[in-house]
Image (cartoon, rainbow, N blue to C red; front, top):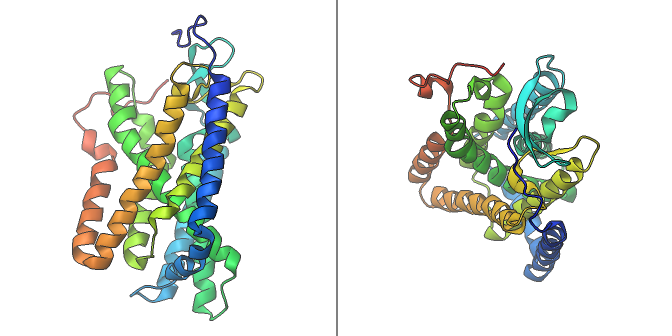
Length: 311
C-alpha cells in the first residue's frame, strides 16, 4: 500500500470544516438576499410545458426514475458480485483496495448523483402526471423540482466528465483493468444520467436561472460532510483522497469541488438559453457536449485493459 497522508503535515480538519460552514452560511444568505424563494413557482411551472404531449414527458420521467431505482436496488445494493474501489484509510492514511457490497456501494459521488437523478425525475414526473390529469401541482413539488434538477444537472455532467477524462486515463496510466467501468450500473451512473437529463432539458425547455447554481453547491457540501463523517466510522475510509480534510490542500479541494458542481450547472443553464433562442442549434450543441463526456466500451476497443475486470 502507498502512504498518502504525511503524518508530519498539520491537520487541516478544523479549517476544512470552517470552510464548509462558511460556504453554507454564505449560500443561505445568498438564497435570502437574491430572493430565490420567489423564483421557484414560476420556474417550477416551466418544467410542465413541452411541445410534446405531457403524457409522453410523464412516461419518460417515470421511466428514468425507475431506471435509477432499479440500478440502485438490484444492480448495486443486492448485487452479489463485489465491486472494487481504491480508498484512503482514515487511521493510517494509506491507499487500499476494498471490495464493496450492499449499501457500501452507494457511498460514492456517482451513486449520490444517480439517486438525486432518480428522485428529481420521480418528483418532476409526479408533477407532470398531476398536470396531465388537471390537478393543481403543490408548491412543494414545484420547489423540489427546481432544487433537484439543477443538482442533477451539475452532478451528472461533472461525474461523466471526471470519469472519462480523469479516472479512466488514470487507470490506464497505472495499468489497471477498467472493464468494471462498463458494467450496467456504472454505465447508468456515468453516462445515462447525463444523456437523459439532456433529453429532458431539450424536450421541456424549462426556465433555468443562474441563481439556482446555489443548489449544486449545497449538495456538494452535504456530500463532503457525509464523506468526513463516513471516514470516522470504525474501519472508515475516504472514497476520494482529495476529500481527506486533514491534508494541506483540503480546503482548496473543497472549494474546487463546489465550484465545479456549480460551473457545470451554469453550462446547462447556458445551453437552456441557447435552446430557447434556437432549438436546433441549442440541441446540436447540447448533443455534442454530451457526446464528448460519455464513454462506452466500444470507444476504447484498442486499449488492452478496456475489457479486463479487476480480480
